[in-house]
Length: 287
Image (tube, rainbow, N blue to C red; front, side):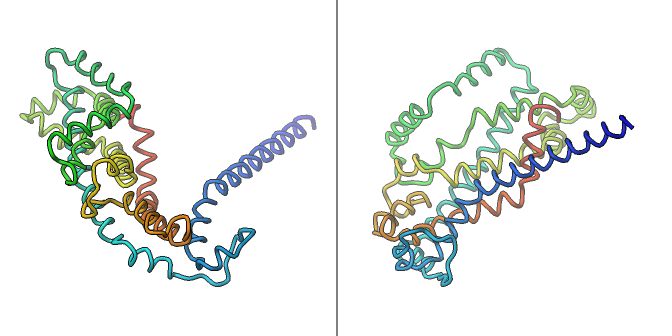
């Protein structure tokens, strides 16, 4: 009888703990998603109805898409989206090549001073980002690359953290696979392309997605290095919307622009969130 009561108490305790966990997770999810809901709600409110709300309402009975029309007609948002797409794709592609080759060299190749070079390379992570921005700005300006895609792209084609993450992932692959490939006459490049990359695909996908998000959200560097509208990214476009009187005065139009800019990243995350979680979990544990 006592055993049955103890089992019943244990089940009740487990149920109560699970219920509390779900309640807390639901509350946290609402806290995280509410800003997105508010952004979307504000974007479909008219200018007059938004300004007439002394107490903000959590719904609207007269949604409108005019704000989305305004952000495409007031500023060339389509051009900014295209520029951002070019910047993101090219930067990510070059970064992947640099990261994969550097990680493979540090993980599998033997050369004099490798450990010292990798230690010095990791020490770059200790340098404040502000100092890097300043030195990059001076370098790009001296090379006369301001207001160009090359000037936008070059400072972002490498990442110490991504190289370290992929290097650790490569290092977890058993050495026997490398020796077996060499016995079969496979070159180092062939081993990288045919063995390492397929095994470490989740980590590479994770790095790719994180870099895409980083490029798409880039704000400081594009603002510093470009003042020609022909090379503006979406971050520049948001600022131009504010300067054209659609910011503080027309919040619904501003929110519509943010929704348009956020949609690609939201879709990217929804499509590849499982790969992101898999890559992060496998990055430093196994191949």
